[in-house]
Image 1 (cartoon, one colour):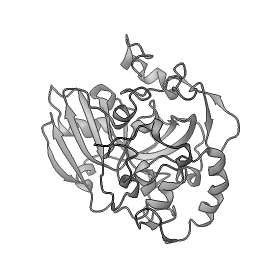
Image 2 (cartoon, one colour):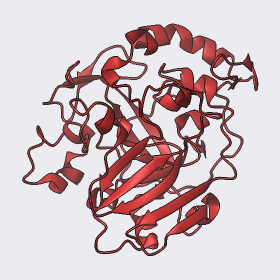
Image 3 (cartoon, one colour):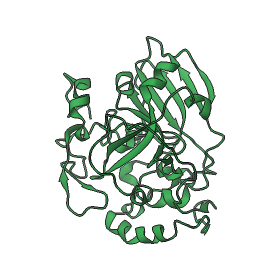
Length: 317
């Protein structure tokens, strides 16, 4: 098994924000096109980040929503991390259009009563959708505010009926290099895996998202099903989920495996603990010029700090 650590990734592989800004207008101007041509990565289609056809109407607004105005859809859908399609920030918008999100299944395994393979629509059918406007903090000192459409993760977990030995929940992303050309490179150990403690997963803030901005979730943002954990760094919010496993012992997540000195299991936003290669004390909202102070737990300390009572959050990062 060949694993490429984050520290092994060339800086030329990762697009800086200043470079992105000069490219964003190009992407926006081509958003109305369905097909731009053949992509260089594995022959995948180079598809613009056009809005999805299906929209959601009459959704209730969650009381957990922030009052901060959301970022523009065009920004959020063209500047994100989804290494399965490439390490550059604009790569997901360019290369994810060919991902087939129907049919889609979710496998449920482990210490839970209702194991099995579920068609996505059947998996989500019992639960009501709502809109939640969340702050979303990415590890590279930038953030955004997004109106997500989804289902409370705790409702789904309750419906699956985990057993008494289920202390953790592990999530796994689709592994299909024919659709996800970034997986043809050993940037990470595929498939992507993330995990939460069961009490984190059943906290009312945790969300399984299927859309954003009232639209079906774009492929580049994690369609058709992704996790949103707003008090943690964005890499915890795993995309394109195909498996959920309930465990007695903590899972080893992808970034823990690849760069354990930089990424721990918890990944709670803690401005007092610097990343080894940059400060976390300030952040820049996507589309803005000036930085602002990073808030503990990404501004959700009142809701979630009690989950970590007695823990050393400098060691349990």
